[in-house]
Length: 178
Image (tube, rainbow, N blue to C red):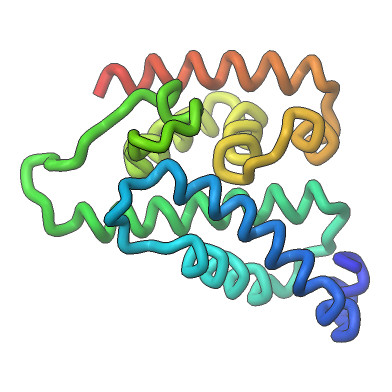
């Protein structure tokens, strides 16, 4: 259905919409569980914004579900970082609270990840090792399993497990230095 949609088949999009919405909702719910209870961005708003950005993408030849989730993961990262930057724009002297990525990855319901610091660290990681950055985006922002990530990136499961472990350690060290 993704491939038919990318070729312009409107009927495929109609069939795909409920599946896309369900998948984006699952990922967004995971993100919102990590946010503070009074967070202004709701899961439905995150889903809607991601969906709107996805349907605006015109020239993507969707290769697979994994490819779609990888793109959606990157979009959700951008949306969450943009929301964090907007929220923090009015604060002075760095009033935001930072937590280590290792804590955020545990999907704690009480700690809120510092998406701006995480985005800065991921940008640095991407310059050093783009695949490890993609692994973090897919696992953390996209809610993908190690197996789904391996398929999407066309790597072995062992490579993804190793990249995930090394990326978490690298990011934890990078975020601790802030």
